[in-house]
Image 1 (spheres, rainbow, N blue to C red):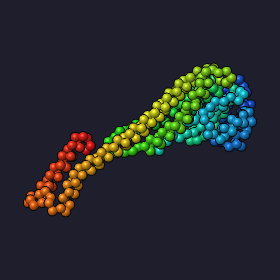
Image 2 (image 1 turned 30 degrees about the horizontal axis):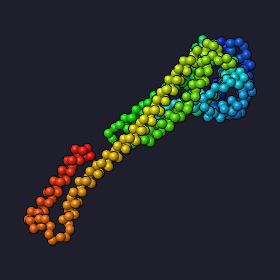
Image 3 (image 1 turned 180 degrees about the vertical axis):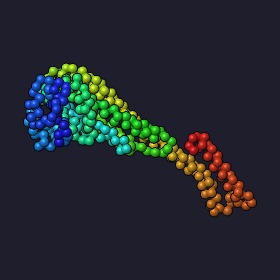
Image 4 (image 1 turned 45 degrees about the vertical axis):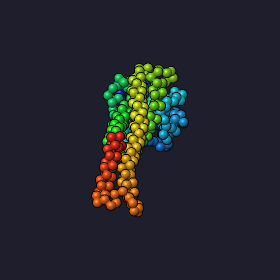
Amino acid sequence: MIVDCAIYDRGTRRNGEVDPAHALEAAREPGSFVWIGLYEPSEDEFDSIQREFQLHELAVEDALHAHQRPKLETYGETVFLVLKTARYIDPEEIIQFGEILVFLGDDFIVTVRHGEASKLDGVRDDLETRPDLLAHGPGAVLHAIVDRVVDDYFPATAGLEEDIDEVENSVFSAERTNPAERIYRLKREIIQFRRAVAPLAVPMERLAARQTGLPLDPRTQDYFRDVHDHLVRDADRIAGLDEVLTGALQANLAQLSMRDNADMRRISAWVAILAVPTMVFGLYGMNFRYMPELEWHYGYPAVVIATFALCLAVHRALRRAGWL
């Protein structure tokens, strides 16, 4: 569906409703451009916009079906940009992704949103309070959208960092816990996050490099360099979190192995202690007439005390060796 459609003259929104099917004709005046925002449109809803702005059929297909990786493509004088949006859902420890697909021309910009995480609340309102930026044309709108998307990566990364800190504390705690499943789930979210963020670096480099052929006001291209710096920062943080989780998983496996070894040593130590009375009582359990101290009145308590003393000596030796 169409969320909003407006024409801007030299940075100021024109009053009145605008028919998307004839918006481009209404924005032919110098210093004017049209901005149409759509949310998960159908083919029928997008058909008139495709014909009005002469959008390439391959880009339109991507915009309708989404599920694209971040990319920047040019079709004649039109730029097609795919952005991945991200929002961290802390109780479920998942990242909710969305998509924003942008068509940019000399005098128009069309944005198509998919998913709940692709909201651009306030971007249009903020821009309309800055007519000096809107006067730069559709490129100013593109920058504002990209800047909001990249800025939203930061809280998502921060949410992951908090949960990873909890995982690290759990791995090295005295409690006998095994957070391997949680580590795996967080690592999977980070892998998907990297797939959404890392490929956007190349399009941002192109937008910031003043490449010829892109319908952008040269004044707006300077702003994309700042967005690229923020994107690189976020990509580095995500890569760092991935490495931390890999280390936490390896440390958890090492901790489990150490616990198993400690348990086996304790079991072996008690087996060694119990082997002493087993041997002694096994000897005295044999039915022979001539055995040591059979006729002695204190023979039985003497053997029990001696056995207990031997067990105590073995226990002390094993405890000093760190097996108990």
